[in-house]
Amino acid sequence: MSTPYVLLGLLARGPRHGYELKREHDARLPRTKPVAFGQVYATLGRLTRDGLIQEAGQDRGGGPDRTAYALTEAGRAALAEWLGSVEPPAPHVQSALLAKVVVALFGSDDARAARRYLAAQREAHLARMRELTKTKSGEEASIADIVAADYAIRHLDADLRWMETTLDRVEAFHREVSHD
Image (tube, rainbow, N blue to C red; front, side, top):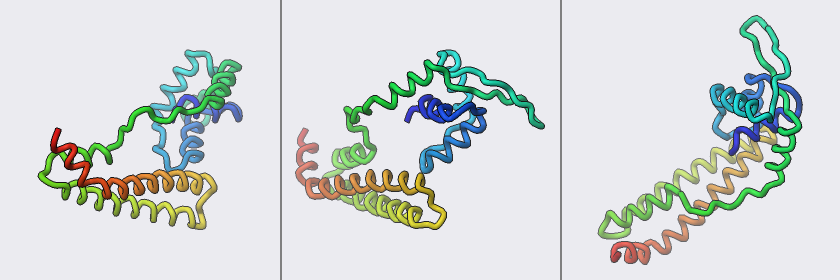
């Protein structure tokens, strides 16, 4: 995910302080890693430097001054360009799942290590899917929670299907990697 563009998107609704942006980021993108305050302020500095946002005033509440930021026309154009671009599918497979299966096959005389790993990983994936399904059906689940859980469940399901296919192929895979 691209934090600068998410912040631009949040600022498209009107000026916000860094604290508000952090809080709104975390609320609007549930189930993602929360953005750190330091990352928000560093990103705001770069967006200001690049002319995509500008200071829109300061407030003095009972604490330190808080600077509000607003989107510039250049920021609106950059956001529109980003939203209009298609995210390319990942060109390389960089999965810890795949790496562990291959390494388990390299490091053993038979395919049992890979099978044990895949069985344990399958159980972890199923447990996570149950957690996410419970989250979706909870009374306090927002539509954002449900959409995020659906996204995660679909990815876990794809991993599970890959694990099942790989279990069917693990003997042949072991023969191939052990003869290299």
